[in-house]
Image 1 (cartoon, rainbow, N blue to C red):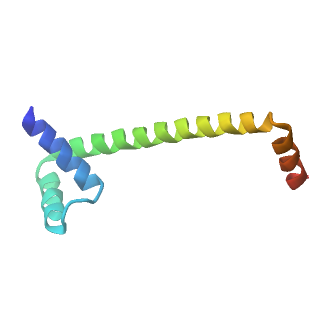
Image 2: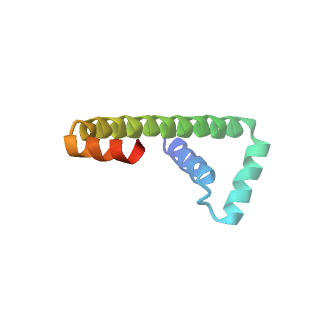
Image 3: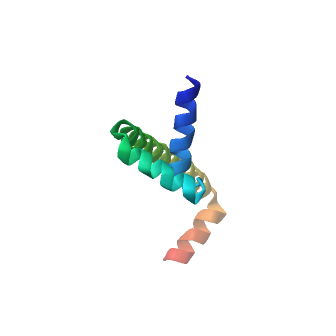
Length: 85
């Protein structure tokens, strides 16, 4: 289990470009020599992308909710309408 956690951490550091240059190059060489590691890197990259998309979706929902609340206030609604009309 500990080895798996260390590997996940190394993959995340590799994907985030937070490894020192020498370690980054060494990890890159390991992915070329071990196809199963390359598959894990690809899977982790997809997971990180999904997390980013989910985070953006949540932020957009919050912004939409805030905008709708603001538009219910008469003074804000009037100010926005005068700017864009």
